[in-house]
Length: 70
Image 1 (spheres, helix red, strand yellow):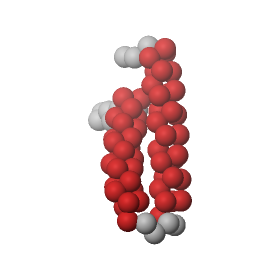
Image 2 (cartoon, helix red, strand yellow; image 1 turned 90 degrees about the horizontal axis):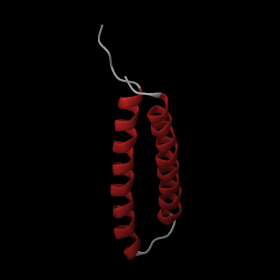
Image 3 (tube, one colour; image 1 turned 90 degrees about the vertical axis):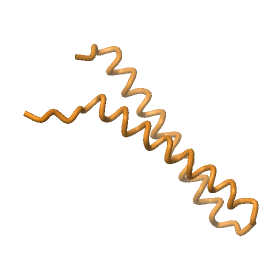
């Protein structure tokens, strides 16, 4: 069982990661409005970064709310 402080640390980290992901989504949205070739590579990197953040969010959520089969 996790103690309160580590649980709270994970919740704080989850908030930070979600904010980072949201920021990347906003940047990607504004970049898509531009039509420049170099932006495609930047969007590709941002998609990878967003995917990594989503994986981190999923891992943190699985620790905070584990699937317990009774």
